[in-house]
Amino acid sequence: MFYVDPGWLTALVSGAAGIAITGELDAAVARIAAPWARGDEAVTPRAGVLIRSALVRECPGLLIRPYRGHGDTRKPLAVLRQDTLGPDVLLVLFADVPDEIELAEPPEGLSFGIDTDLEGRRTINLRRVDAPVAQEITNEAFPNPPGPDGLDAHLRPDPAGRPAVLDLRPTAGTGLLRALGARLTALGQQAAADFGPAGLATQLVNAPLRQLITREPAR
Picture 1 (cartoon, rainbow, N blue to C red):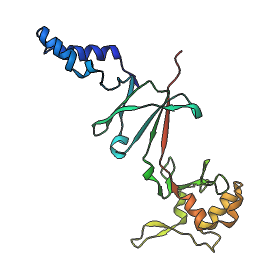
Picture 2 (picture 1 turned 180 degrees about the vertical axis):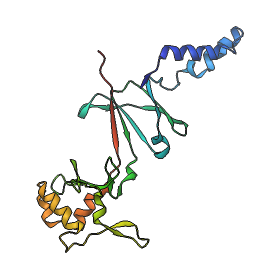
Picture 3 (picture 1 turned 30 degrees about the vertical axis):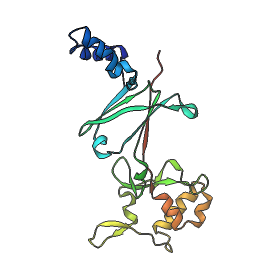
Picture 4 (picture 1 turned 90 degrees about the vertical axis):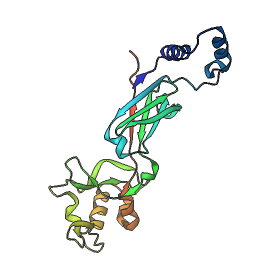
């Protein structure tokens, strides 16, 4: 994050405006007709961020939400400008200095699918089936431990022979449906005893991701 100096911006605008003023008549016209003299200029930004990341290219609808304060009492700030300066460079200007900045994927990014762990193995990040339903269970995934193959043991070949189809087999003890239900039951999720299609859909939810950046207080 960077800060914007209002005094420097004022000097810059005044200098640019003064180039065409060659006499008293020009000065008088400028005082009357110039936008900054009429008082209808845009709000001067106080801070901003310059993001250089592949995220700018891969997520063109990236949401930038600045806040003043923290937690439940925080208040949103106005985003004065958000422009893509290059394939992977995003400039955002704020009306005030934020305490928190939230980067979020667009809400329409909700999808269903499996996940991968840090080593690239296929897994399913587990979610609650008891209240509050669908809330992620921190640091819990299936299978656990993932082993060398992760979720591949519960995939069957597609028509092209690739392991890409979930092998549910609801009546088999080694099928994905029962194995997932057993894992959730072991984690204390009582509703997993009747684990079925709705419970599976809950586990396969891939919600849009959010990242919160917090500004350290001045020392």
